[in-house]
Image (cartoon, rainbow, N blue to C red):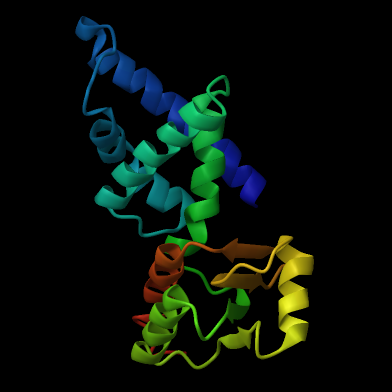
Amino acid sequence: MLKDQKEELIKLFVVAGKAHESAFADRDGEDEDWPLWYAEFLKEKINKLLNTKISLSNLVYFLIQFENERNLWSENSEWTSFYSERLINKIPLYAIRNDIEQISLYYATYCPFCASIMEKIKTLRIKNITLRDIYDNSGYHQELINERGKAIVPALKIRLSDKNEIWYVDPNEIIVFLENSFTTKEGL
């Protein structure tokens, strides 16, 4: 499914690129506000394709982030493929989904980022999240090393019903995921 979505996103970005080129032909495609133009063109189409609720401002942010990353790491890569891959990784943050089997948070009590996530879990009254303190339980510490290659917290592991796993290690992304997944569901 993700592979199909990525291919559809690539096609969507190609269409957007051609539309942008046409819209700014008189300026040789130059548009200093290109992220806003693309976000406005793509928002509804992406949300429909991915069954998400990504806001215009978040999409603008992602487009800027993806272009900065591409320039930093993969300048020679095709932008449509690069952006599609990155956006696919953002889907769980904004997805309207019912296929989450288990959510596990690897954390440490001394970590301030973890504390803010724990506070968000408490505020949202989330009950069905497995909490794994990596310093209180050496098994969780080793499990995190085995799965991620290092024991850095916070780390949120989302296991889907098809047994695929998605990991988030950015505290802000973890909070966005929790808010989008649990705000309207009474903490599940």
